Every structure is written in structure tokens, then in C-alpha cells.
Amino acid sequence: MKKLILLIFNIILLSIGNCGGPLISRLYFIHGGQRIWIPSMLQTVGCPIILIPLALAYFQRRKIEGPEAKIVFITRQEFIASAGVGIIVGLDGYLNSWGPAKLPVSTSTLINATQLAFTALFAVLIVKQKLTAYSMNSVVLLIAGAATLALRANGDRPAGESSKDYMLGFVMTFIGAVFYGLMLPLIELIYMKAKRAVTYTTVLEIQMIIGISASVFCTVGMIINKDFQAIPREASHYRIGESNYYMVLVWCAIIWQFALLGLVGVIFYSSSLLSGIIGAFLLPVTEVLAVILFHEKFQAEKGVAIFLALWGFVSYFYGEYEQGKKEKKMKLKKNESQISQQLEMDQTAHVV
Image 1 (cartoon, rainbow, N blue to C red):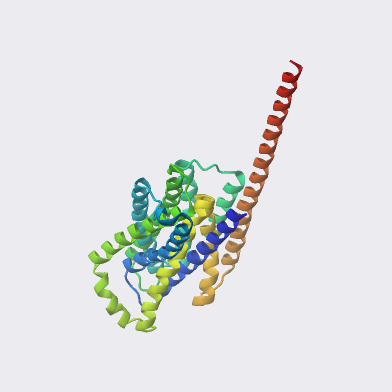
Image 2: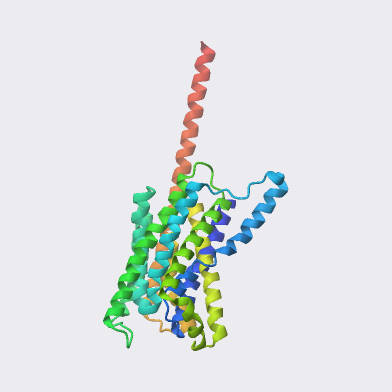
């Protein structure tokens, strides 16, 4: 029960981040933001927030264990692996930032929906994830749901944008979907390769290293692109005010950190495939929020996408429920068989 509660808690964090992150990134671009590296860096720079639960966990251990309580649990191998994944996360953040900057919502959502297909593919190849009929059905439904959003994308290139910029945004977002699909199973692989039981404290430490590595990667990009010098100029010309510009940046960092914290938590308590399922399910939800917050039009395609997403989401969890019942029955039969064999052995020994 405790594991289920923690899984639900991390799903909530992931949902807040996955819905709020793209919306606030879009807010940055809508009102005059033009830099790609800035929102990319903000997706991970909020990682110091993790120091709060880590510090609380340490002081709790210190109360119980005394001065001998360990400060960190992450091993050198996990540190190196997490830093490597962090570079992928930073690159993925940069690639995905091209969506809100250059593409309409319908097109970027369609491309991002392919994340689930890549997650399923890499989960099978990297962590040997077994795909049931229900999970495959869920993958197909969720991709189909997001794909319907593109049905309204006739001549969807924004006014005043060149074909070159549009195609660049399209290609970058697609490559970002591939990297996102690769990233999730790699995080799960770090947990699997650990040579001792992985606690949630270790998960937070791994996320901290991933966040620092990704932030350093994006910071280097900002330095090369001279984005730090551009921030005051952007702020002074921001349509909703200079103070609001900095508020958007701060909240962007906080909300995206919810997404990353929830992501590693869902993978830890379940699987990378489930995190991909949830991400795909939230795509049309984000569309509805965009309608409410940014007054975008709500076409019939969005209603169909939401229906298919809900269907796919229910399909996945029903499959997990059926699989759990099946495993429970098999375990019960195995126990009954072992008890029966033990009784027969005892009877034989008694006769002898």
C-alpha cells in the first residue's frame, strides 16, 4: 500500500510538471521570448530543490543512527551513469524547446506523441520490458489520440515564419522525442544495475546528478550563444513586463523540476513504460489547459484525442490489474504445490 501511495504521489508530480512545463515555456515565447537555450536550461536548473528532502532524510537518519549516518548513498558507477543521462536530458530539453518556439501546438503535440513508441522500443531493447496485449493497445491508442490533433494542421506554418525555421523546428522536436524515449529506460537501467537495494533517497541523489549535469550542458550552450547577456534586453522588452519576465523564468524552473522528480519516482516505483504512458496521456490534457489559459480553439479533434488517451490509460492499468491477478494465482498455485510436495515427503518419511 505504501508503494502505491508513493507511486500516486509521483504521478501527481509528473502530471503537474508535464502539463505545466510546456505551458509556461509557451508563455515565455508567446510574450516575446526568443532564446532556445534559456527555457532548455530552466527545465533542470531547479534541481537544488531536491536538497530539501535530502537534508530532511539525512537528519532523520542521524537521529536514528547517530554520527555514523551516511550522508550520500549514490555510488561512483551510478554517479557516472547519472551524469551521462543528464547530458542526454539537457540535449533533449534543448531539442524539445524548438516545439513551443517554432511549431503550432497541433504539430508539436503530434511529434511528441511518438515519445511513447520510442519509450516502448527502447524499454524492450534496454531493460527487457515485456509488452502485454493491453500495454501494446495502450501505446497504439495514445499515439492515435495525439495524432488526431494534427488533423487540423492544414497549412499550419505560423504567419511570418520561414519554411527553413519551420522544418528545423519539426526535425529538432522529432529528434527530441527519440532522445526522450531513450532517456526513460536508461534511468530504469541505472536502478537495475545497482548492486544493492535502491532507496528513494538514492533516487533523489541520482536525479540531483542528472539535473546538475543537464544544467551544466545547457549553461555551456547559453554561454556560447551569449544568452546571459541577452536576458536583460529580453526582460526590458517583454510584453507583460520585466518583473513578469523573471517570474516566468522562476516558475518555469520550479514546475519543470516537478516533472523530473515525478519522472524518476514513477520509473522507480513502476517502470519507464508507465512514465511514457502517463506522458502521452497528458498531451491532450495539456491541449485543454492551453484552450483555457491561452484561449486556443477547441476543435472536435481534441475531444477525440482526449477520449482515446483516456481509453489507452485505462487499458494500461486494466492490463496491469489482470497481470497482477495472474501472477498472484500462479504464486498461490506454486505455494500449494510446494506444500503438497512437503506433505507427501513427510508422509513418506513417517511410513519409513
